[in-house]
Image (cartoon, rainbow, N blue to C red):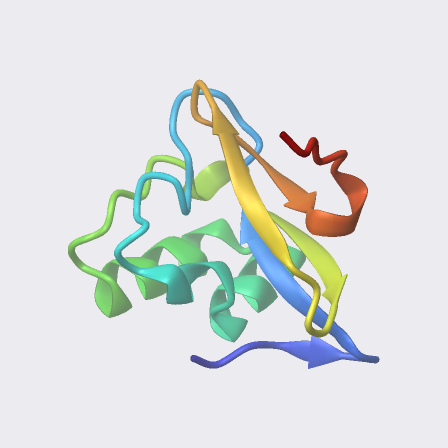
Length: 102
């Protein structure tokens, strides 16, 4: 799986807008959260090229969260998950969570 890495940080795509998630609605394609081409389009806010690229490369995914995509830069090897509530995604980093032990 290709990832965009700069200065020891990995670009991770997520969709914080309500209604439709990016990864949470397309979990069978985990590569979409790291795709370097999508990251570059999102950072340039080139939504037309982004949509065209996604529709050609991933024709069977739901793209409802595409227009709300954001990039988060995480240190390499960071354990994280994408949390979704009502379509709004956020990134949770393992060391930032308070875990309980039974």
